[in-house]
Image (cartoon, rainbow, N blue to C red; front, side, top):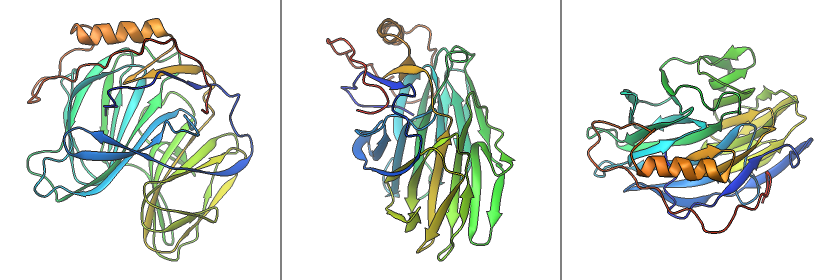
Length: 321
C-alpha cells in the first residue's frame, strides 16, 4: 500500500507530548488522494489535526467504488521500510505481490499483513476477474526502534477471532479485544477491530484506559459516544476510557483503532518510516538504484519512482500540526 503523493511532506510523528490523556471527541476530516490509475482514497492519517493513534500512523478509506468496467486498484511496485501495512476489505479483492515472492489474493474480512522491517517492495492490484465493488481500508503501523530492522515477511489470515453480542460482531484484526486475540504479528501494544452493527444496536465496547483510540466509519449510520459519524470520517477519542458506547441508526460498520501512545518520535516520508533525514535519503537512493528493496516479479508495469526530497530541512512538529 503506497503513498502516491508526488510531493510528500517530511514529518515527525510520535512522542507523547501531545497525547490527549483524557476522553475527547475530535472529529478528523479526510482529504482526497489519487491512488493508482482509478482509485481515490480518503486519507485520515496523517491528518491536519493529528498524525498517529497508538502505533497507527497512516489510514486510507476507499470505496465503495463500482469497478465493474474499470481496472480498480492498480498500484505498481514500490518500497517500504520501518512499518507494517494492513490490507482490509469489505468488498472486492486485492492481489498482493512482493519482493519475497509472496503472491496472495486478499478478500473481504481477511487480514493481509506485510511487515517491511528493514526493506521490502510490493504491488497491489485488483485482479482482472473481480467483483463489481471495491471497498476497504489500508493502514500502516509504525515499528518501534527495537524491531524496525526485522526480516521482512508477509502474513495472510483468512480466519480471525470474533467478539459477538446481540446486534454486534467485532472481527479482531490486530491485537486483543475482550479476550479475543488476532494471529497477526504485532510489535507494540495495539488493537484493530472491524465492528459490524445492526440497526438499533447499542453495544458498549470494552477499552483499555492506557490506550488512545479512534473510530473510522466504514458504512452506514452510527453514533460513537453520541457523535454521529459519516462513512469515510474518523473520530479521535483520546485516552482514559474503559468502554465506548456505540449506537447504530442503520446497519453500519466501523473500525476501532487503538494502542499505547507511541513514545518514540519517527520520521515519515513517502513510503518510509525512519529516524533521521540521512536514513530517509539513503532509503530513497537505494530504491532508485535498485538495491536493498528487492524486485517484485510478475507485475505488468514499471516500479514507481521515488519523489524528490524537499530541499528544506525537517522542522519537527510532534504528534499534531
